[in-house]
Image 1 (cartoon, one colour):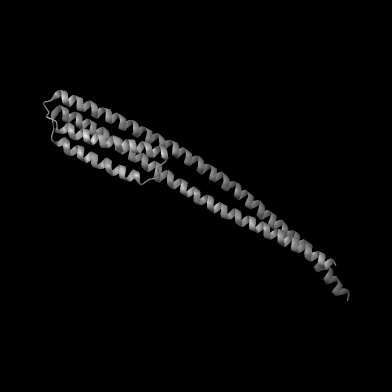
Image 2 (cartoon, rainbow, N blue to C red; image 1 turned 135 degrees about the vertical axis):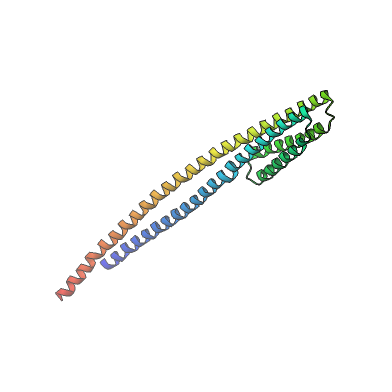
Length: 222
């Protein structure tokens, strides 16, 4: 009956070892999943936040250049300003097209929609402003006031969009830190499981030695 008891104990040890191996496999798969999440998080920080922040900066710069050009146009009626304004608008529209392709939050989508409305209104006001006779000072002054109001609204929406990038970037950073901490915990758990495997294997080996030794002794006595 001793041999049956020995086999039973070994079967229990083997079962426990299988469970430990399964747990290690699961933790390994979870670790890979977390690494994938971490990669997605870093990708989003770069593609959807840092790059978008550069779009916002460039759009803001072109808006500022447009405002200066229109003020010059009101003072000097320079015909070259029209082509300059057209180039600025073309660049801004291109940046907005690229912005649309990024991942937008609900709040960001609202402010971006408002900003696009600002740009459309600005372009209409710019065209009307540049087509007005330069000698109508009062009309020019009124149009310029409307333009400046739209510029201010556009700048305010750009500022909100920029703040969203900062907030979302912080959120992604916190998420990445949480993933790193979880991965570190899983690694520690996996190491503990490997130590358990080593202990179980050692127990199996030690438990087998007496049986082998007794069998060898009995054969010598015979």
